[in-house]
Image (cartoon, rainbow, N blue to C red):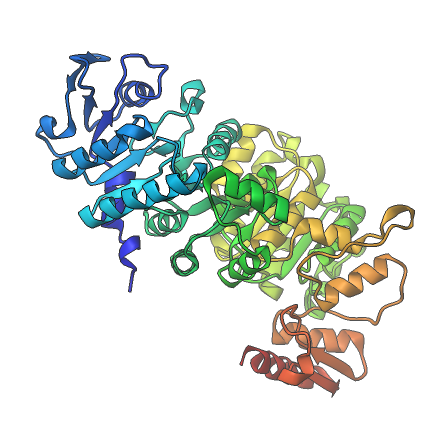
Length: 567
């Protein structure tokens, strides 16, 4: 059952209003009370627009009303651009006029101390009692790019507008939100809804996540979080997004004591224990970003290709050296790179006797003589193992006009034949060609390592930065720093191997067939053990099977240990 706070009808007046009034409206398009009116008129808002200013008769060509009640027409959204001392009277006016939602720019509330907190609490109580939904105070407002709603005084849209798209962006910080808006514009990322929540007297970041989870115009949700006052509300929102198949990409600050203190001084947010947030994010499949670049890379990639169903990946290359690089990157990121079956490998050798057929598959430069090898090899890989992700390194071939039709047909064919596989290619493409490939649902990366890291993050792998730090020996004898969440066993073994410590041969299997193949490849009796950072004593939960001999036994042991661990 949907929480009342998450009911779309209670928030749609805020996020998709049909009528807007600006209280404190100014004739100057450079002032806080004038910017929203200028934006609505300039950018094509097609609903009713009202200016409220008791000291004026006209504002930017609109009649000026003395109050919201005086308008005498339904108002979905009131934008409140008045000093804190006038907020109480403005809210009374909004309640009396039957306004459904209020965006409150005004500062001077919980972020300034106890008195401000008390005033904010009284404000929220009155709005709640009247059924009025409130964004803010101390916020930069919101924008609905699909409906040309600009309930903000941010200068960012005035510099250049973001195109309407299918990514929703929510930020507890106005400044971060404005910068992210500008980055979206520069990177060509289209947005559906942009919201800054400020002090969150009423509407919280969680409410925005839940609304976007149910919004048919949004496929991916980006969020910047400083803290959370209602953990259950946040969990319910993330669960709703997960149930609706909407990936959530999150930047959560305050992971250190200093950062938490800074967040609290900004919007009075309660940062809390970062380990708790990390656990919640893992539970609900949130993609946690640790930089603005990663924030947009993950959101854009999720919007283009979706998320892989597991961590298995097929790697295809025209260069043995780059194939080895991708294999190293995949191992460090905890991806599963199972070898192709003997039959598939034999087929590849029949096509190209000097190919490397396991996984990565290196078909070599022979593709120059026979372009059909590209699609034939890719289809063979996907038919043989059904990888959740497939990535092909095509060197600089993408820059060739002669190769472009082949590449376009390859992507279109694979996308149609394997709709549940996340596809990616690494090559050099002109911007317009890259856009065409991405429009077909295939990711494009100039750097194959960037591609592997992104695919691993989309699959819910551990943090890329942590993997790199953990897998590489520290320079000049400094101690290796482990990630805060610790390592699972394959990651720890990879780190030791890179440091020159001999490790036991091992394979990571994502299904029973892969386990059987691994047992045959390793030979002799093997141990089957569940991979989980969250289960330190695996034998205590039946997560270990010893002396497993042969493919059939490995297949059975995989199912048994995984079932025990899940139970």
